Amino acid sequence: MPLTMSLTRRKAGNVLALVVVIALNGVAASGVMSGDSIGVIANRYRSLVLPADYVFGIWSLIYLGLIASAIYQALPTVGAERAVQRLGIWWIVTGALNVAWISLFSFGQFALALMVMVIFLGTLITIGERVRAGESSRRSGRATLAEQAFLIWPQDIYLAWISVALIVNSFQFAHVVAWSGFGIAEQTWAVTLMIIATALGAIMAWRRGNWLFPLVVAWALRGIGVRYADIGTLAGTTSWLVPTGVVVGLLAWVAGRRARGDGATERVTSR
Picture (cartoon, rainbow, N blue to C red):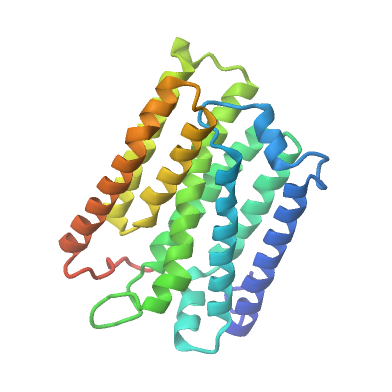
């Protein structure tokens, strides 16, 4: 996409990109794309970190947030123009990677799909840095409420879920290739990675002000406990890890706000 493209065209391009992503995801989710839905394929190679099916309903929330973000970007306001400038080409890049992942996964190209998801996560991290660029209020460096609601929070949920999805897809791929896990029991791997994901949620809340990250992790872990309620190790771990993650994540977020000074959004150099 030419860097000289006018803001109007860039706004239109971002809206169009989201429409394409949602449409193709709908096709894949229905099973029309490859003959099997994403849910059917995922359950075919079920691992011990695969949440219950209802958990994946979070995509509806993610897309609602992205739709709100696209509408916000399309508005004829200074804030909208600043949002488009901050996002740069990355909004469209993440859309393309989303479509690439869903297509590869739908057709059983799991190794390629996993590699694409790693890149996908990297682009979301980049967007997360850019939208927290602290340019909206020159004096305080705080993001406005509109920027938080329509720019930062939708991307925070998106980043958190793809982080969780990368763990889920890695375990799924391990089942595809029949990996032995270095002789370590899958339950041990599952509990270890659930604890790591919870710790990551607290770190993101503390360091980046992403208070939604630990909530998304807790949502996924609760779903694992529901799916595997008959496996004592997993159900027992999630029963205490979920509330612990939420509480620790909240405390970490508050501590991070205080460390940055009166709750201001951290200043990050815009790329």
